[in-house]
Image (cartoon, rainbow, N blue to C red):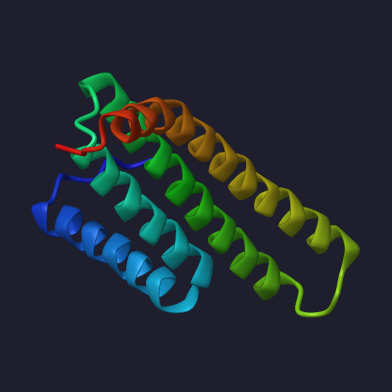
Length: 131
């Protein structure tokens, strides 16, 4: 296999493809928008509750994990629909497994959020103030 030369133009172009993919998912996928709204809520809550740096890592990783699973699920669904337009039990199984990955990542993120936020919110409620 021939080795290609490094090109800044090609690297920048590859980012434009990625941003176009985000634009497509934002415009077409309702669940992706819901996950982004949940991510914004988590980030705002993290800031207001002054979580630790390690808690920030867990929140950021959780958000990225859910969004990546949603993107891969969407790509897999589109590919499956392209390959087989008619109803097919094998395609359904593939789509169901991909959807399960999104669900599992969302549940994991929710549990991480609850572990981090509940003690801080309980403390906030007992003190009666957020700041």
